Image (cartoon, rainbow, N blue to C red; front, side, top):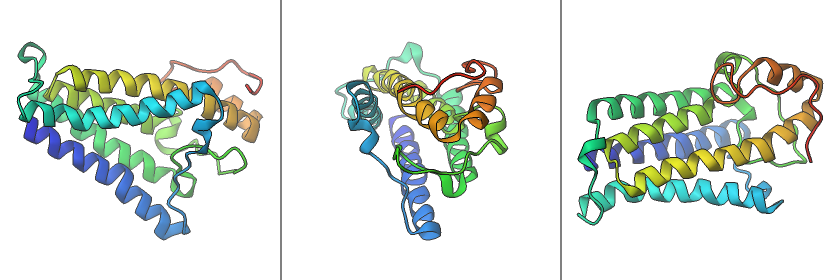
Length: 205
């Protein structure tokens, strides 16, 4: 399973970051990567760091298993389910990224205004890219369930929570005001119906 997991993980990185960044650059002349927001506050830096840690651990998990350093826990291993979840997560991540069009970014520039996308998969959850990324990480963890893959899943979940709550939601409330507030009050954060914001929520600093 480690070889399959490594292949799926490299495919995921190539599509979600490499191909998507290239398509954005080809379309707009800008690859869409914004990393300055992570230095705005300790909490935001922590979110960015956890995201990077999750990527590193996700790569390390199958490599360490192949080397025999950190073998998978057989009791937790679910090869078929893990493969299906990982493939669905990879496809869903790329689809949601493409649906953002020119508004797609990795990170937030607080001085930049992009169009608010509420159609396509964004009708069901406000952050479908992150939802699919979490599903991908869960699938990969089921393929090679060791300490590294499980830590990668936890790091990703916590990092995305910090990024969304402390960076993206305040930015979108400030930038799009009532339009974002109405959408956020009716649409879940990562899961349909869950994590909706109170109507008229004020922008957070």
